[in-house]
Amino acid sequence: MPEIPLVPAHWSFPAHPASVRRARHAVAESLPDVLRPQLGYDLGLLTSELLTNAIRHGACREDGDLVELVLWPADGHYWLAVSDPGTGKPVLAHQGADAESGRGLILVDSLAAAWTSRPRPTRGTSVIAGLSFRQGG
Image (cartoon, rainbow, N blue to C red; front, side):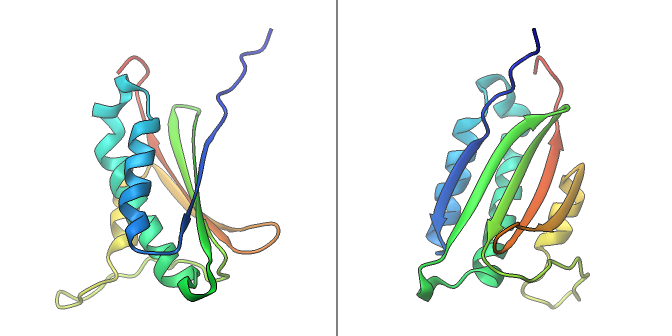
């Protein structure tokens, strides 16, 4: 009999900066206890950076837009997908030393085993990033 996979965790949050903290907490709480020490901090950083980008660049708070998160384990990784209704594609750019923003994707690129962006089938864009983990802690 095949192993039945876990159902991915899924959340929707208002496109508001206050959602970043709530999302980080939700993602951390969904991890198995044994994996929190291994993945909790880095997954929290990925959640913060990707959700902040989605809120700033892909969603419109005034329109009541939502951003979505999906978290699932597969093939020795925990995958996080952050989706917004925007059509833009994130670009990895190296900012000057005096820039006050624009380093989020550099952090994502250094933390994640892999990441990409994909258009959604109906509307919007998803950014997917994976962190590798060791079974058994």
